[in-house]
Every structure is written in C-alpha cells, then in structure tokens.
Image (cartoon, rainbow, N blue to C red; front, side):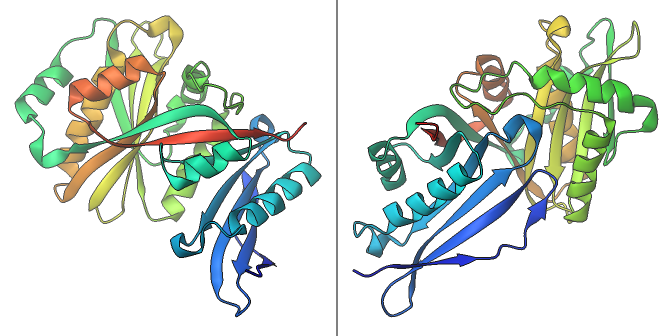
Length: 295
C-alpha cells in the first residue's frame, strides 16, 4: 500500500508547548492515520516530547504507524529532545506496537470515577466535619485569593516527590504567575476551577491542596487535577479530608453533575487508598511508554 504523509499546521499553541501534525493518506487521498507531536517548552519538560499516534483499525499492519512514528521521532530528535512518550491501554494494539518498536513501559496510570448519585452524604459530611487539630479547610473558585497566592505557590512542591516511574518529566517550578495562568486557562475554556486547601493554623500557610475542574454548565463529569500534601504535614489525613470536602462541595453546588474522574500513578499507594476509601471505581488503565532518542 502506498502511503503519503502530509505535514499540517496546528494552530494550537500554549505557554507550555507547541504541536506538529502529520496526516497519513492512501493512494486515493483517503486519510488512514495521524500523529500529533507535542514539543514542550517549559524548562522541566524541554528535553522530551509526547505523541498521539492513531491508525484506522482497518488500515493497520501496512506500515502506516511506523511511517508516522518515524516522522515524529525524527522531528523530536531534530528539536533536541532526548525522549519520546506515547500512551496506550494495557494489551491494546497500540501497546503492542510501541513495545515492538523499542518503547519501554515508564509508568501506569489507573483512571477511576465516583458516581455522585451513589455517594453516602452523611458519611462524607461526618468525614469533612471531623476535627483535624492544628488545621482548617478553606476553598475558592478560579484564581487563588491574593492573600493566599504566595503560600499556595509554595505548596505546589507537594507534587515534587510524586512517583512517576521512569517518566523523566522532572519537577515543575511553580510561582504565583504560574498558578494564576493555570486558573486563567481553565476560565478561558468556560470551566470552573475549584480548589480546597488545608491551612496550618500555626502560621497560616497552606499545607496541602486539591483541585477540581467542572464544566461551566455544571453537567457531565468533573475532573480532579492535582492533590498534594507537603511532606512535613503528611500523616494527619489531610489528603482524604480535602478530597472529601471537594466531593461534598461539588455535590451541593452542582446538583446536575454526574460524577468525578481522577487518575493516579499505580505507584502512588497513599492516593490510591484515598480514592478507594472515598468510593472511586477504577475504569481503565493507561501505560506511558518512553523511547530513548539519545541512542
């Protein structure tokens, strides 16, 4: 089969990266596959790239995927990237394809969902109302209030030691401008960013946080973003406390919301235990595969 690759211009640009796109077509000009290559521009990820490669099921086995992969890998190397990352579900054709072409399994994520209609409100309320001596909860929508901005940015280092397997994404250097830009990006999409934090009453600093994004119309499923507790404040149940509060507030404020979705690295056992205890049900897994481009 004769396959032709066309390089397209992707208008999507953001502060964190840019994308390149290739479309694969057969001899009749019919599209049979594509690959999107994201080239990160943030310092912690500037050494790597991510790709989303897809081939129509009926067209697999004819070399289209290999042609698309070669185009993406060549462009990533040319741009100075040391690694290329792709995702696939365990046991899928995509997983077999990546493994056969030299990709290693870097880390596995488990995705889970909480059905809000089935939550035990009395139990959830009791969990949120349970005292945590020395700490109090606070929350806001959208951009962090000015009075908490500095300590909220500092609290983001709670994510620095999150287990990420062999996925060399590095750590994010958060500052006030960065946390505000994330909130602004969510608002531009028309979504609502809701944040719950645990505050250390001794000094008023944020000890941990959890973030939830809900569609502007309050329907469908909300998506959890980051949840983290600073190392010096772990062991007090703050993660479970904050996430329970976020669930309860979402249920009360968005009565038409169906559920909440989250994803967790399999090696992050404390967060997996929190999700299990709060009633999240696993839905599927995704493996992040990594190809070393430096060899």
